[in-house]
Length: 216
Image 1 (cartoon, helix red, strand yellow):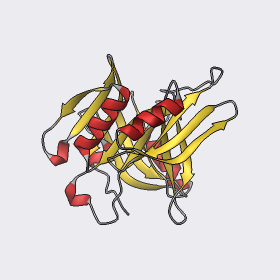
Image 2 (cartoon, rainbow, N blue to C red):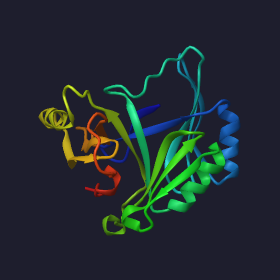
Image 3 (tube, one colour):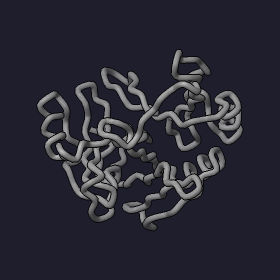
Image 4 (cartoon, rainbow, N blue to C red):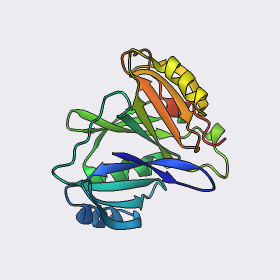
């Protein structure tokens, strides 16, 4: 699951929540592995129990213990399709999340410009980690999650980007093809960064996080 939250100044940002069978137990486990809880456990009616932490790679993430009745769709237009953790502490992030959730990983590339790790649960790919490109890093650069929202294939990424601009959005990365679809990175009028993807248009390998200048 993902949500929008207020951030520094007038900007907002997306926050990712990862599922936990027992939120309190998983928070304690995360703290044992070096995470710091920043938002205490609380309950959201008809959603579940949640908490927010910052991991040892300095990236914020949430944990959610969903109620049995809660419905959550993914993989559809306008819903969450994919998520990438963008951080300079790549190996630290890999180790932390693999220990916390039992992920296995497949590495792509060996240099900073192409260091990309896909995390799996069993046979299913679930998340990815991107090593920040040093040329784009400044003193104010912060690790973050880049969340991908689905694009209706009948509309397409390019047309959706034009619609976003007409409604006050800004383009950070122009539309381009990747192995998982045609993608772009945008900011909404509140400053929140996110990616969009049309999975029906898959091409050569690429990740929007490797082309996104991390700070405006």
